[in-house]
Each structure stands twice: as structure tokens, then as C-alpha cells.
Length: 155
Image (cartoon, rainbow, N blue to C red):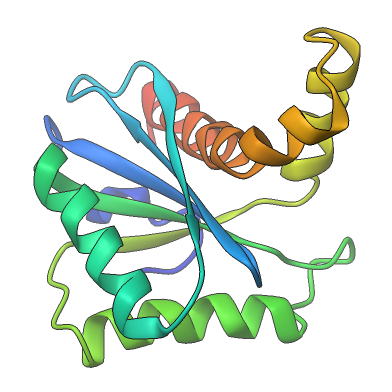
């Protein structure tokens, strides 16, 4: 596992997955191998770790993902609370219990979900029900796109 902003751990020319882990769902996004555009993929409903991990592994394998950008929900003051610890534990479990070898890099996701919700309400004019169906995978794409933009600026 890499520390936040340690994007150098990611292999160039590969698809990256973006994950927005929540307590009930995990938003999933993916980008192209050229690291230009992040696109929402799906929202995984969380059940048991094994089932959740199997679905994430399936998505990574289907896309031949070379790395993962995992949203880390830090507090506004930059400290890490229980939600951030839960995300770090998910990454540890994927590596230690499931044997993941692709790099997982944490990305500060402060306000990503609220930014996406503002967009969906204001620009897309989506109903509350429809927003609930897409917000997590859109937040994952927002997180991944932030990392891609940083990668293009050069580390």
C-alpha cells in the first residue's frame, strides 16, 4: 500500500480503478490506459468482505487493472477518523487476505461525494432516487479523475 499522493507506485500504461468505499456501497470507476478520462463503472452493494472482494477482483481482472486509487475520507482538518481507518483496513484486507498484488494508492477524497451531488442536482437535474443509484460510482470517477489530473501535471 502506498501513502496518499504516492502516485509513482502506479504502473504507466495500465487501466486504473478508482474506489469510493462507503459503509453500504463501494463506488467503482476506471480509466483508459492513457490515464486521460475516468468513467463510472458500477456501485457494489457491500455484503460480506469475501463477496465484495470477489466482485472488485472480477472488475479489476476484466479491465486488466494495474493499480487502484482508493478514496481516503480524511477530516477537514486533515486528520483521520474511523471512516479513514475503515478504508485503510479494507485495503489491508485486500492485500493480506485476498493476496492483491496491484498497487493501492490512497487519495484524499474530502468533499468528493458532496461535489458530485451538487453537480447531479444542479447541472444534471437528477431525481433523489436516481442520484442515489449513481452518486457512489460518480464519486469514484471524481476521485480517480483528480489523481489522473495530478499524474498529467507530473509528479
